[in-house]
Image (tube, helix red, strand yellow):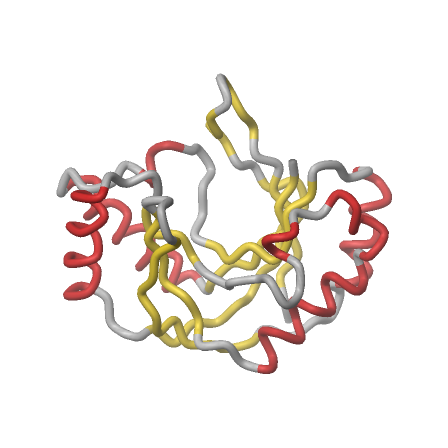
Length: 182
């Protein structure tokens, strides 16, 4: 499996990582500690299989000279019956276009693409915690609702990650290629 993800500016990444630490120290979620090399991100696409050389060449060509863009993280939400809590951006034309362009340029991988991340199905979000019990989810919602303010963030990097699994559990999410936006 591979993920194509967008990353936040340094300040926002530090803010989100600090939130993960606070949730861990508070005994609410160990999300940040479950996977090495995990960075706060929004997933654009997920693929079962990719051909590395071809993919990297396409990735480099598509994301060369793409400008950074700003957005607001303004919604605290959860996915039903998953124990997942997230912060989501206010959808903007720029974000939707960025996502759609990715899927258009990588159409050759459509058969391997996870339908949850395809245009018209995608729910952009940055996971704060997951696999929470109902009790811990309520604690996380309460904590984050009082802790988090609306954030204006800059998307300044796009990466391909290759999650690594052990005993059906993700243990690492290394970046295999990354491009800074200009």
